[in-house]
Image: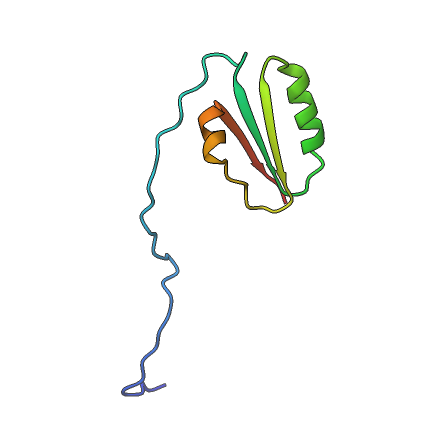
Amino acid sequence: MAATKGKVYKCLNPVGNQEPVETFPLARRLDKLEGKTIHLSICGEADIWVPLEKNLKMEYPDVNWTVKKRFHIVPLELTEEERKTTDAVILGVCW
């Protein structure tokens, strides 16, 4: 097979191009849970969330739980007021 002059072939590199990403250090762990406000963000439809929420509230009754449920995979963002008053977030996505 002879090469055709002037013909350009384009192909994708299978290795791909990795764009740089901004990284952040891990958040500090809470020293205790008692009296803290923990936000539970539930995304997606999964039967695990009902017993998980119930068990967390039973196991940690001294924690102030706030919960947002959304039946999409994209998690809900906390409002500015919620960010100021929340000590930790548990975020889970199920599909």
